[in-house]
Amino acid sequence: MQASPSFYTQLNRSITDNNTLLCVGLDPVPKLIPQHLGTGLNALYTFCKAIVDATASLVCAFKPQIAHFSALGAEQQLVQLIQYIHEAYPGLPVILDAKRGDIGSTAELYAKEAFVRYCADAVTVNPYLGKESIQPFLDYPGRGTIVLCRTSNPDSAWLQKFPDDDPAFLKVAKAAVTWQKTSEVMLVAGATYPEEIAAIRDIATHVPLLVPGIGAQGGDLQKVLKAGLIDGTGMVINASRSIIYASADTDFAQAAGLAAIGLRDEINRYR
Amino acid sequence: MQASPSFYTQLNRSITDNNTLLCVGLDPVPKLIPQHLGTGLNALYTFCKAIVDATASLVCAFKPQIAHFSALGAEQQLVQLIQYIHEAYPGLPVILDAKRGDIGSTAELYAKEAFVRYCADAVTVNPYLGKESIQPFLDYPGRGTIVLCRTSNPDSAWLQKFPDDDPAFLKVAKAAVTWQKTSEVMLVAGATYPEEIAAIRDIATHVPLLVPGIGAQGGDLQKVLKAGLIDGTGMVINASRSIIYASADTDFAQAAGLAAIGLRDEINRYR
Image 1 (tube, chains in turn yellow, green):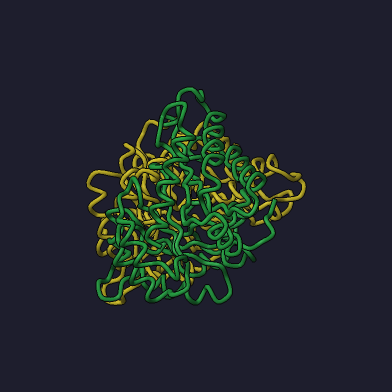
Image 2 (tube, rainbow over the protein chains, first blue to last red):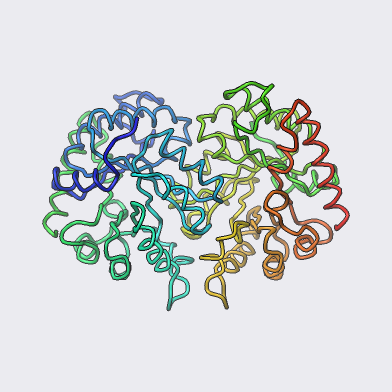
């Protein structure tokens, strides 16, 4: 199944129609799934579907993280989940968080995995192998390629901010400007480093940013938005654990909805 | 199933016992699989198994590339293939080529995918997210973590050789020396850049190298070996397409065996 409008079109419409920059990350962890749902891969799917239903009107995108499925052999549940989102909430884009990166011929297969097998509207990719490794994703018309630029984890400066005076992550930001001329790209910029979001925005003035690290990872929302917004948009703020595990009880879906409303509104206050 | 000896132990024994530095990459592509094997995922498994049987005595490791399976939904065939190698050729290590890289909590899941679900003895990982993203792999006792350092593709200099005077790939090589104190690590160093293999070897004097790019990608074998060998060992030379697609006819397995003998012997001439 392929949604007809392009990734950018779907994303912009969802941002406008739902008045939100929030993206909910679907990172199911068996031991955190409410006990009353049971165990096993069916419980995992039921949990994710309930979170989707509780938050679909509050988000501009969903972002399932593939390792949470592949570590368990739950590929079929991931296929079903993305299909369910497309059918129940047409026009709401799905970002597959896979952070793939390989030589060109293999990157073609990873692009096929994301866009054909899983029918994702966009996928995250890793730039360490060079532009050739990203091109096969860019070549899929109407799909989004979301390139790791400056990630949210504490240790990420090691290669990304190297060297100090001309860091690698800004080379990636510059490349994204070129890629955007012919393809629908975004950059991943962690909420934990708002001053670097500003540096990315100075270079990539029109490239939307996917921002993890709000919520459980603890980035400063107001600073982050100030650094990256373009006329109140141009950013997608992802939260996973703080939303989907808001309650471990029978009210988990309702609690996820309330947590999503809270974060959506907090984001909107600073737009 | 988990093999008892550690990755380094298995690798060193296989290098000695089979007198080879050759690793065969298992990269099945449906349109390249000999027609007489039929089509579909069963044909893919049959093809890979026949290549394994034809080359097992000629290699020190096998390296299945995961996108070749996941793009087709052939996870179960990959599980079966690795299980078959472990059962039929105990002690011969399997390197899962997955190039994973994510924040720590997600990297734990990718490590579980590689080492628990697929029972690989080692896995390739991407360093762009920092040391924290590699630690969960290093923490699996007796398993190998193979870090992308200087890859074989034409466009890889972009971030890896940046900046010129203190390139990122040598930072990765330095880190590998530290990791090797407590874990079994290797570095990926493409055959297309022998002078950079020499630079890696100068820093990482005892870290074994996994070298793709011989064969179809066209690296210079003699220069590569001169640059990276430690007393005739310390390198694993991978070839995929030039071996496994040596013939597209009913003699494909025999042709793969002959191609593997040819490359093994050529490597041994320069050891």
